[in-house]
Length: 296
Image 1 (cartoon, rainbow, N blue to C red):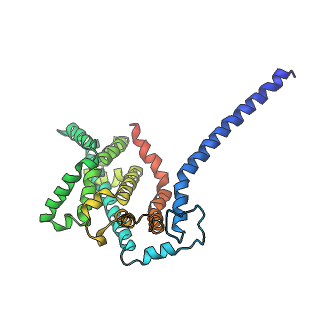
Image 2 (cartoon, rainbow, N blue to C red):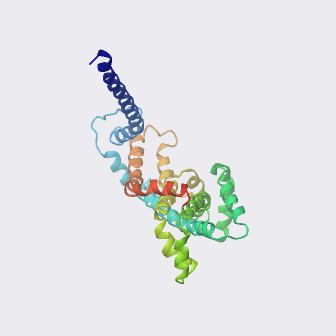
């Protein structure tokens, strides 16, 4: 074997090793970028000094005193905030899935006058950022509260109403794309057997489109669970606060360095429901987001 022939396999091996090496390096950098903040928050939550100024990656005399102070505080009812957030998020996710699926079914399966205009209107509404509607949202909820107090300011019903209004557009479009990929032969077969439109929607279509229902429910839940701006405007009493608004009390008025440990402990506990949902529903996410991309 000549020296040139012997050098060729070595050249390819070196090239493959370099290719694998830089990919591993990029993956490690991405992991460090993603897990670095989490590590700092975990460290801060276990640091009894409860200060961001003196925080170290590995805290000295680590304990769970911050968690104990958080859960036993009478001034800041963390447990109530968490329950409020779960209640609002679950109701918002359930109603969003129900209303958007009915709307998407109508747009996908029926042909009626004004259908295209309604679809474009629903889409264009989502173009404007939510921050532009804060004043209008406040005034609207205030006006609704004059007639229905349970849907007005400082009520969870009013907050859910705002979330539902903001979730209709993009989720309806997302579901419609998935519904379009469901063969119409299923509808026709059921209709021949005497099924009504409601029965077709409820018994035929919904079981087939479970992935997109799961995706919309998860996105709606996370959106309501982690939102800070809208609850800050709608809710006023401490007992009505959501988790994001309640945790902000620990870092107001220059107390960020004093309550950093307790704030971190609350953030970690609050992240448990989201992480749990992702773990159990991850199999539906990819299919639900991509299956409606191609009709057929």
